[in-house]
Every structure is written in structure tokens, then in C-alpha cells.
Length: 239
Image (cartoon, rainbow, N blue to C red; front, side):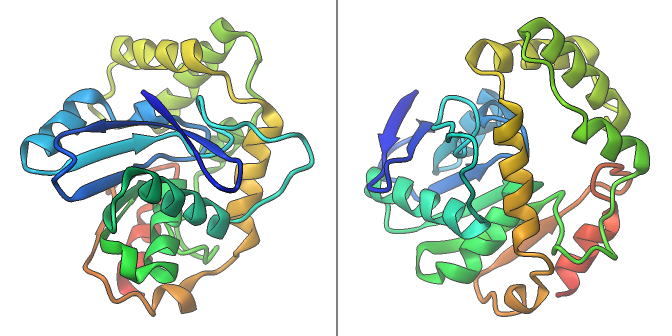
């Protein structure tokens, strides 16, 4: 993995798969997650199809810059980070793929940077309209509960949370290994998690902006998602 230091001073940890000559697919993870969300086998499979696949940690995530308490930013700032990473990689444009919060960043990227966006995929995300895509009460309570700073306790919380919104293919052993890998890299401070939540909330309902997207777009959403209800994806596609 490598570190890209952007002109803004933000440092982004990232990893690339495939040939630098191929079109870039930029993978954007979700709230409280890390680049490891996009597993190596998935990245290698895309690379084998002729893409340069880049996964990265957002600011306040993983091994990227963790800002000082009191800092604030928006989805637009996270888009600027993605553009800075593309500049660092020498990539004129990318296919952007985002899950959950990453989907919101990908959507905003397509709105604000159409010349740098070959296509956009929004996965398990929403439009910011609170009438759609609301989590179940149990899932929301679990997600917003403070995470322990102790790595072992953090792993256990991640595993307990995942069981609440897991799919029928959930594998406890695999999930535990993934969360152990997360904790070995970084345990996200609470103030960093809260800033990511604030960045999402700052834009509120984004539907008018999303209606201006002109790049090829695909919306993907699980039919029994309890963290972001399927209506979030349906509404995104409708807009």
C-alpha cells in the first residue's frame, strides 16, 4: 500500500491492482470502514477484466489522515480528496464505485466532477431524503454506539453489529478475520466517525443535485438491507 500526500495536506492510503495503462476503477468504502472492505479477490477479479482498480481509505479512516478533533468537512471535500488521488495517480478520469457513505461520495463526485467521472455505481446508499432508506432502529442504535478503543473489544463490536445487518451469506469466521485486519491497521477514533456522519448530514437531501447527473449510472441495493432500507436505492434510481 502507498500514501498519496495531496496539496491540501491530506494523506490517503491506497492500493492499486492491474496495469497503470488500464482505465481506473476507484472504490469508495462506507462509514466507519476501511479500504479492506473491498477484498483483494474482488479487486483482482476486476483488474483481470482490464481495469486498474484502486481502493483507498477516506480521510478519518484506516491509515489515511485522521484529523484533529473539531475539524469539519463535507462530501464535497471527500470528492476533492478523490480528485487529488486521481491526480496523484496520473489518471484523467475514473469509474467510481461507492458503498453506503462511499455511494454518497460517488454520487457527489458524478455531480461535481462529470469530466473526471467515466461512470458511477451507487451501492447500498441513498439520496439524503430521510423519507427513504431509513435504517431499522436496532441497526441505527448499534451503528451509532461508541466503538471501544481497545482493538479486541472493537473487533467484537464490529462482529456483533454485523450480525444485526448481515446477509444470509454472513460467515462469522470470515467477518472476524476481516475485522481483525481492520483493527491491526487502525481503530477509528470516535471524533473521526462523528465527523464522517456530520459530512453526510451536512448536505441533507441531495435529490436536486443528483437529478443533474449525466454519466452512466448503476444503482445496486440488497432487497433485505436493514442498515439502509431498499427504498434508499429505489429512490436513488428514480431520481
